[in-house]
Image (cartoon, rainbow, N blue to C red; front, side):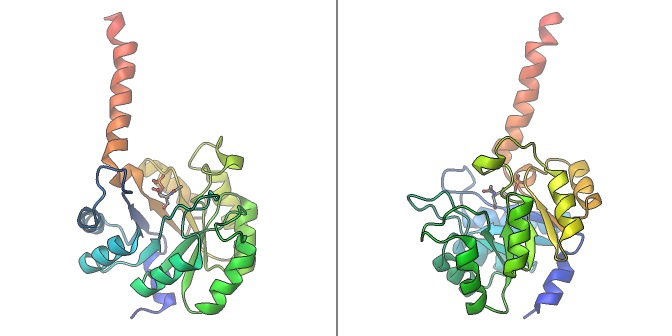
Length: 239
Ligand SMILES: CC(=O)N[C@H](C=O)[C@@H](O)[C@H](O)[C@H](O)COP(=O)(O)O
């Protein structure tokens, strides 16, 4: 068993690849997520972010890298879906996620609590577990630090009503968090290119998570198809 300092050291200044496919996505399969994680490891990733107990169990069998575990669960009446309640936290502790990430926006959770109310209870129950706050704003990050989270990520920026118009990656947010918080800042969300990744680290990121650009072939294909469509609409017409 690695201790928390070793886990944080392993991901320092490194690439973490998110291997996720929800039931409505074409690659939904724990087996496939395990193979994705293997490919990511062989390609140089030093950590994996994964969703669900089944996927994490499979990935742990295939790669020895630290895992940021989440459980995406939708509950009626709340927009919070990344590890929203104690039930999901407990399941991720039980499966042995090295770091557990949870939505740390100020939105009301399914159990009607806010992050300010629920995190102290979670922290008290699991004092030695690493927790990452999936934040949408600088204020979310500040609060997460004050509440005792171990890492702050920019995961939810662009995915709340307040931030939906923001262009990703939000480098200014990464930089502001890195300049002002004494805990690791994880750049996550909308990192599409190796250049984006370098810039995230220049902004002070401790580590960065890349998902869609590496592990969602449907979205990757769509980018190529859109570029082809542009060519058809503009250049081809003028030939
Ligand atoms: C908002 C939300 O649900 N984000 C999820 C969080 O785990 C994943 O769907 C993203 O793929 C992940 O954050 C990585 O980001 P990107 O795929 O943009 O590289």
